[in-house]
Image (cartoon, rainbow, N blue to C red):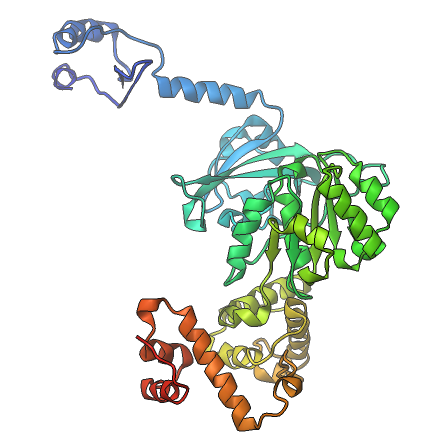
Length: 473
């Protein structure tokens, strides 16, 4: 480098490589032939240097030009975006699809061209459709494939994502086959609280070929997860899908489904509603590996399936948590539901409401157990928004929930039969303390830790532990 400095040659960049990894490439833009001849002999005198020569392109430039030339000749749009949704690079086909010059595309926001794309959720990478995602670009239908770019070897969370590479393909024409249908509505999942583990598991299982089962109470989001599983499967690129409900299935229908091509995805909602002979036929077909397409189903209760089907799905089962099991995240769920509901109705969304104004609503909602989970909560928020509009308000308040009732999803009369109220309360109190103690790591089981979780004093917790003869370390 001192030689280049002495001859006043500006070296812009350099890299090490070659077939044996023993070559040094330096890029000196504007280097004249006479300058090269002047420094060539000096460079050859450096210990270890065996040969000095000029080349047209250093390896990274060659790779760049080769890739650029390759992408220019690709007939479908290809582009990359960063973690903020800005387009980093795009080929000529993408620029033509977007209706702008190729040089104008880098730096633009992707949502300028795909305004309905749920970009924030896609960039999270955990709950996003990957393959065959239907989009409209300037009124023309395309299917979008989304490939996240991860930082390092980890892809476990949003922080590991640096952006994504997108490819767009012209949407296939409508099908005429009676068994083949249009793909489901694209879904983006809310990976909050206990649902996050379900989202990660779905991301791992959806690309596999084995049958997939999603279970949960009514309104937990089984169908939402089912549709998301479809778009997380590479088979979604082909768009071959068949959808039905368990109660509409018969034995002949199972036989027809089993003969569909291997690149088809079969989605069945509420499989437990199918007659027993239909379940038996499906189980036999799966166990004998005679069911060719990819099967994804939902049920409410796993134990309602025939034992043969339980065996088939035992390793590919995702149980969804209830809403009442995720009370700490209720406010975030409420805001997501409000945004979703109000966006379609054009009503104000309380996204800028102070937490103090919102707490009264959330605290009251936390007392409910929602037998219908997200479905029930969504209906409740729709009703509250209508009440807010009727009174001319712009902020949701407790008065917008006039019929809010604290429903408990337990058979208290049967559960407490033969016990006095005091005995029932003591039993519940002891159960809560035991469960909280078990949930804490062994080294952190203390009355102070329990007090923080329960929101009461350390002394009160210590007294209750002594009363119930529970020990902490």
